[in-house]
Amino acid sequence: MVTLKVQNFKSIDELELDLGRVNLLIGENGCGKTSILEAIGMAAAAANQDLSGGALKARGIRVTDPSWMRSAFVEHTKTMPVHLEMSSEKAAYRAILTHDNTAYGVWHDQAKVVFSPERDSAIEVLEDLLRELPARSATASTLDANGERIRVSPSTLRSMIYYAHSLGFADGIGLLQYLAYAPREDVLRDLARDSDVEPIGVHGEGLFKLLEVLTSEGLLPAVKEQLALLGWFDDISVTTGVNPSSRTLQLRDIFLDGTTPFDQRSANEGFLFVLLYACLLISPHTPRFFAIDNVDSALNPKLCAGTVRMFAELTKKYDKRVVLTAHNPGALDGLNLHDDDLRLFVVYRNTEGKTRARRIMPVDVPAGAEPVRLSEAFLRGYLGALPTNF
Image (cartoon, rainbow, N blue to C red; front, side):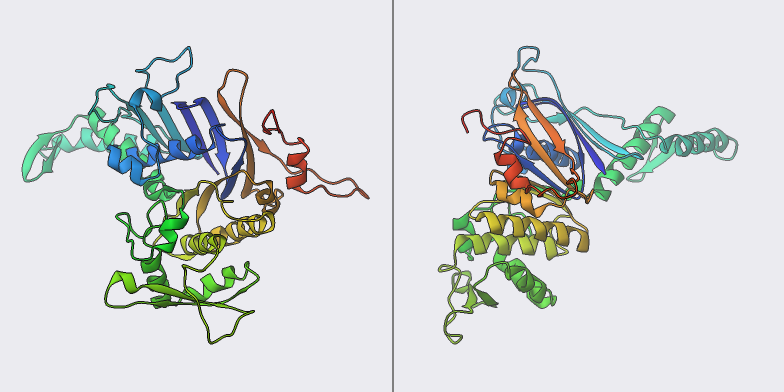
């Protein structure tokens, strides 16, 4: 389990979520689901020490005036820092982000120390070593840096150790790679478009190259297996040429003449989204931790449920962690809430307009009673987070 804590970011004044392997966020439009994904992206950018506007956009963050990247509630000011933390029982990564609100200014991470119960013993050992070294060496309290001698105090060394541990934790949970994907149909159909962020850009750029790599690595059959979610799907192959404009996906429909394939331009958009998700989950080159905003786009309720079940299965098989947002209640039926790795959160705005999230726990069905599907429970209002005018 990884705990996410966010303070003072967009519609979030303060929020804490205990994340599993697959985390589905559902709620009405504008309740803050995407802001949660972006908060994780801000932490990832800070961990990579690149908070420039371009780096934030490449991670799927909607960059706007810095004063509006912070919460605008009465008790907040336009200069208060954004606090972000991801932690486990043993370690944590924390970022404290500030911005001077100037037109061409950049965000800065002011966090210097990240605490962990297991780090104290390592620090004590190193401090003991520093105390012992002067008797053996005149340069006991110095370190080499680019061939020069520099003096490092124990407090600076302690901060260095904390920071190294926190980055190790961030890397361990996949935070350094994290991207929030918002796929677009026009991008997925345009196979000539490559991505500046490899292997896949946040809108789906680079899908063709990734399919080529999956084919060369013998993983395309695993992708095809997932595409059986589409009842008409028979086969897919990758065709390339001397220039990007000749790239095509050759698709076969079990109901059509097997000698007559068609390409991605004729495929329904739902197929393209499921294809992308399968590639993201199966490829060893894609982030181990990522998000999909509006995972239900272009999918009917049954396909929504099947796609979420695919995430549940493949995240375990390929060791991935995902956060998904959805509006279609059909997506909920793909979750088995008795599996603690699979978590459902309803996201809503309270009476003050602040984003809140509540985890939905599994409920045992009484003997002889008819189970109620999660989608139906949501539509009946049992789970909350429905629009007031629904």
